Length: 148
Image (cartoon, rainbow, N blue to C red; front, side, top):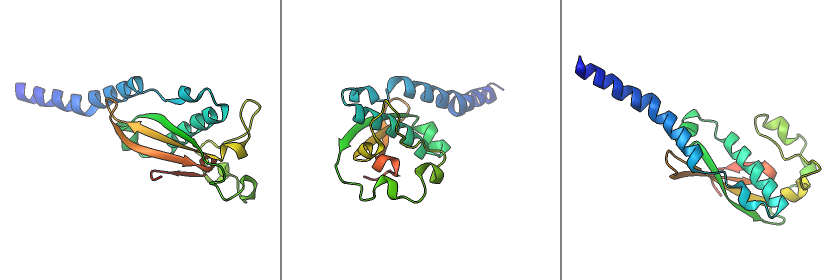
């Protein structure tokens, strides 16, 4: 009986407690990295949007459980790297990817055409801050991938 209780306790810890602890610690230990870009309003807006887009890009539950915390590690200005103009797309970005937030202009944010000239890299971390996956966001969220 004692061995059965020990096995059930180990099963509970490994299946329930450890994943919950990992999610909580991952989000507490790893900050989102967006505040490093406060000096440049365009880079800050790109970092904020890239963090949301990268998190939405990871739609697998296992990915979210194993690596819950994302951190923006780089925002780079690359003028002219997006060949397509923002208004030439026949369908808006929000129609194609309803779950992903689009870069929409508002009074406090730079124009979407300016934000399309930036790329961002978001790194996701595991249980206690170990990096495992990078997500690259380009062209204002039009291209979101795991490869640069």
